[in-house]
Structure formats: C-alpha cells, structure tokens
Length: 269
Image 1: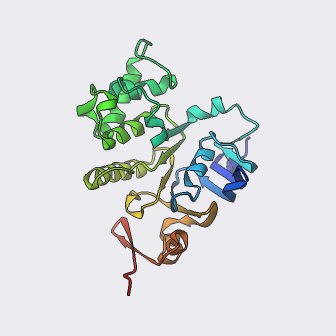
Image 2: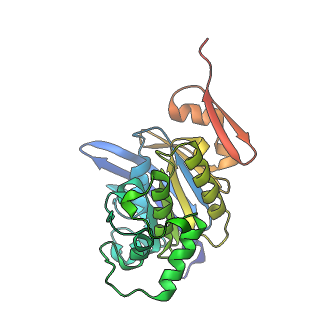
C-alpha cells in the first residue's frame, strides 16, 4: 500500500450496487472521496442516501462492485479493525444508546465500544477529550444530564461529539439536522460549519435532503435519485437549479446567499 495516490482516497466506490429483494437501493455507483473533502449527499427520500452512507461505514457490503474505505477493500479486511477509524452519527444510533447515561458518559463510552459501562476505567486524557468535543458543540452545560432527557438538538450534538471520540479519519453524518426546529438547525449548521472548516477535522460525508442544512465549509456534493448518481463534484459547480430539479423531480430554483444555500419550487401559474 505504499502508493500515495491510493492512500489519499478516503473512499473509493467502483460500480457499487446494493440489491435487496431484487431491487437496487444503490445502482452502479462510482464515487471517490479524497482526504480533507467535505461531501454532502443530497436526494429525495428513498433515493439510497442512507444505504450509500452505510456502505461508506462498512456496515453494508456491496452486492456487486468494490468498496475501498481508508485504503481497505470490503471483503478483504476485518471490518472490526476498520470501524474505529470511522465516526458515525445518525438517527439509528440514538436509539441504541443507554438513556440513563449522562452526556459525558455517552461520549466517553465511544472510546470503549458500544457496550461499555461506567464501571470501566477511563483515562483522564479521554475525559478531557470528551469534554473538549462536547464544549465545541455547545454541550458543556449538559454534561451531567441523562441522554434520554435531552432535546433532539442536544442529542444530535452529543452524538457528533461521540463520533469524534475515536479520532476518526472519516466522519459520517446521517441527517444531523432532521427533526430540529429553526433555532436548533441554525445552531447545528453553524457548529458543523466550524468543524468542516477545521483543517484537522476528518474527511466528512453528510446526508441531507435540504440544501438549507448544508454547512459552510462543505466542498462537494453528490446527488442521488433512485439509487443512481445524477451529479458529483465541487458544490459550486454541481449544486445548480437544473441538477437539483432533476434530482427531486420538479422545477426548483437554487440560490446561494453568502456561504449558505436555499432552494424553492417555482410558483404554480
């Protein structure tokens, strides 16, 4: 693996399809993510966004095609060695975490696998890092709150801090702003923007279906519809009205306002 060109690819999918019960959830997708890039996966419900993210996380194997994550090809690597190198924050994870653990415990246990309990020995270094990540996400006032009592936004921010704990080389965010009210969304987008612009932060892939949720500092967009890639590349080039209209199947106007995006349908005449 001495080839630097290979090593700089965080993710390399070649003709990847994921077929379930005869239906292709992801259909012959080729896509490459380089180190330091921040990607948004955009598309309607059921387009295959989360499936694609699950391939990137090594939790779903391609039915056909090859998936290489952080230089390791799925099928030829022990995924348990690979997974600590990938941080994942998503809706599915929130339901698996113990509701009675505090925010600090929830983030700390990431370093020790899903099942860790508070009885285990934690290093002061780990606790310091957990506190630092939580602080970056505005969660310092909530350290001792039980995870189960948090609002949706607080929970999301805790999960992102948790995903950072293993010092991942790739950070995956599955609809981080889903279910948030306007204030919660804006707070999260601002914090994700700070993270995205940090040169030391891992490469990032975020799934969303709202362009308003794209944080400043995200560099690339992949648009997917019915399992197929419609567009992939630098966000300034690819996030256009025509691409977005094709992606969502109705005429949309995309506008850029500073470092944020909005989209709306054309008025009915």
